[in-house]
Length: 220
Ligand code: 3PG
Image (cartoon, rainbow, N blue to C red):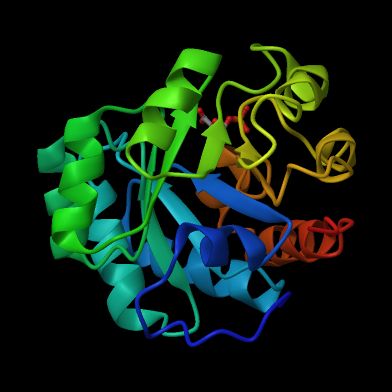
């Protein structure tokens, strides 16, 4: 792990981002599978896990990981409303990731005491998040919205913001992002391929996590 942190204490968004070079973005449909997958990722050195609220079983999967995999730190992704944030917190999520930002979502996350990593894709969205006190942001969808060149450009006017680019990031291009001074980590779904999950190929997932955990860490 990049840092020794007390993962049982409330986390900051920066701590979530600094723990490893990659936050896996995960789609799950089965709580038992979720536990085995989480153990496989932890075995590979990745413990901050973003489980997306994209399936009816996602909250049950978050709850199962929170209860059964103490070495993992499970967060909820694809959170789009205050109700999503509340349900995620009730299920045991320790951090929240969203594809965009609203002040209502920011308030909901403060109310439930969880750090929020909100998605932004424009300067105006960055300024709205900053107005609400957020300085660690997800750049989404990273490749489609301008890639590393966009983040480099933002480094001028938004030099005080740190990013987690997500969307189209892969093992092949992750270091292009991680080399930037305003990138702390990246997010991506490549650590948990749907076919590996379906086959229960936990060793494959551990290997992908291990490779991801060894990607170059940023120098911030
Ligand atoms: C998503 O929207 O699923 C995440 O941003 C991950 O994107 P990816 O599948 O391109 O890594």
